[in-house]
Length: 119
Image (cartoon, rainbow, N blue to C red; front, top):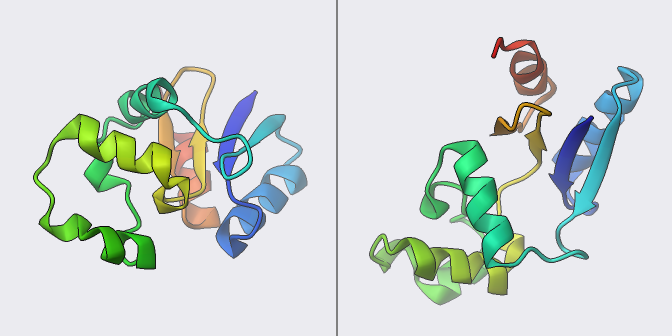
């Protein structure tokens, strides 16, 4: 079972969800704009992604600009707190495999590569 963190208003998320359906791959969605993640959720997700929070932020989003994120020091907890307060900043969609690995998949090709990757 795959888990996909997505935003139903994001065309990329919709395209990836449709592709998973076409492939008939069992998956469960998490609309993180509706079911907001807490600090622990974000921390676990980052570990699965093998990433720091500043690497998964949509820096071009107006909220990122308003917060001045480009000027923030790389303080992990502060960035996690920003993602909790503004989940819209999280890049999407994020697919999590049963083995715990996760990836931000911005295209069908990236999804296919991620799904085909050996453990």
